[in-house]
Length: 230
Image (cartoon, rainbow, N blue to C red):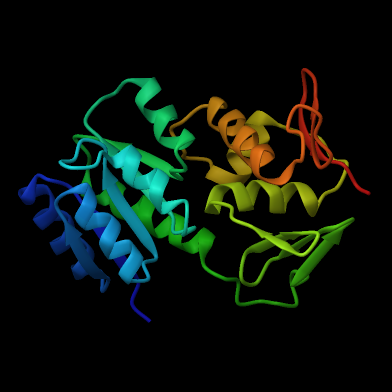
């Protein structure tokens, strides 16, 4: 089945170029040119990934991403013309899964899209990985990528899920920030270990009753993070 992508940018030439290139690879592409239009499209349709420019009319890309995260786990890649690290981290704070800095090479964009879709698509080989992982009152469903605590579903982004999945499948094993970055984001990811800290903090805010005294995801000071087996 063709992958469906939403491209959001107020520069119509950029949208046209991305759309043409993705359609050449057999993807279905919808386009939006302001934040409000983008939000309505995400609410009305199911996408495999959203490419979202930071600087948009009506609603900024950050505001759109934040509102998307209230109802959807669709992977979001921020497009930013600024090279400032704080912009990139801010995008991750609002729930983005990745970022690409303009000007970009369309081949890089396509490679990043395919990598994210590949990582976030449900796995075909169910025997290779247990479908439901349980630890205490937490249940992690690997096939449909859902997490439940005491029967209540917790809404995680794609990357938050992948961090939790790696840790819960290897309980009590300490992963350095560098190792987590490589395992979850890949060898070629251009960001640094602050990305890991941002996602772990957001993950704790969602799964922990008291994030400053975590029950699940713990810090091994000076080393990294681990999931404490119950």
